[in-house]
Length: 536
Image (tube, rainbow, N blue to C red):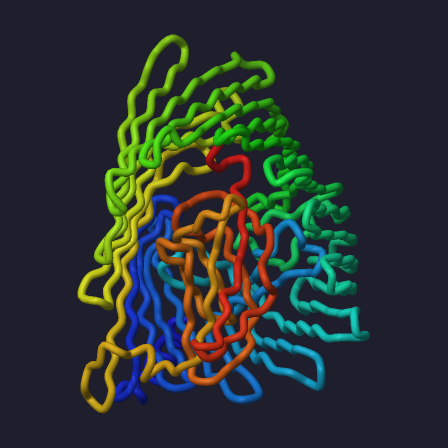
């Protein structure tokens, strides 16, 4: 790995006279990491070198990417999307390799080939850290076999072979049926899925069966949960004012440095209603985690008292198996003082005691700042699953090209953790710096997208992989990628690397992202949902 880093640094040095240099770095208690990355872009080339520490150990990595009219070549660390058409509940699967890869098109089929070694990655949004695991050859092929049918094959030849084959039927009118089967790391796997999207009803249903030690690739990390057995999510909108949701999800989560998987189940139901300006909702969660179970209920109501004052109340109930029940009443008042300033106050009543919280937000071209108390449901903490925490988010723009991002969040065990990041870019054109670096150096083609939650609110700090480029959303949920020529790239949502630390799953996301001229640009939309660890 060290030799490869030196080679790519040397190659990158050949075109330092005309390029964009991007620098990013940060620190996070969630990922237990600190580090940074230097990226150099010049025409069709991109070179990046990153280094830092994860859990107190030093890691580094490098990557060289060259794009041509017919193919895209990668040398070094290669983040490889690995999604099956039956992944309708989670399209954030990927693996990492160290070696040489090529993405191209043969007739009507998209092909990805790789030779090198699979790699254990170490979760850090600030740099690519990897450690080679075992030699591997990879071949992924996807193509049309009929007007409405698409076939795919995912083969990994390594110490433990993976060979998964899929067929997908798409009606073009909102109905999709898919089948997948084969083996992953020498463990059997079969899946069937149905997805229906209509104006008044959305249905996702799938059944997954696999060996107890199934993994898509023979690597310890990234640890990615796999759906198991029956999974269903039904959303019904009988009127514009009423929404009903019911679902059941089963997961197998690999245990790090072990061949074992941990099984968890979440049953959920909810109803939301708008009546005379009052938004009301009721949610029920029944979760089983590591053999322990809990039943939780959330009742809430809110409304605008005046155009500037919004009030709300939530009643939280938890009934853990074998432990004492808990009840909490949370009342909030939010005041909009101006388009830039919003203040909020909250009162938490539990066991006869009151806790007061204060927060607010500020928005300007220079900075976006927010601080407010939020309540999270943490199923891993069965005895006391509700956690109220002060959540801070900040994005500050300095000198036009330097951005500082930071925030706090609640981890899976209820701890309050943080992430902080800085990123900037310097451009040179014929030896002169220019502020219009995006237009002149990177070209007029753009991939533009937005990440939203189920309520339509933007998700800041969402992590995505556009081909081999990692991008994060801004405070409005947008992400951008510029390039010289229009191209189509695979798109992967990295749900395990969101900067805000929330626990998410992908509701809907396009499999590909296509760049086009700015005047022709349409904004693709990615919808994610917080899992039961999320905000209640």
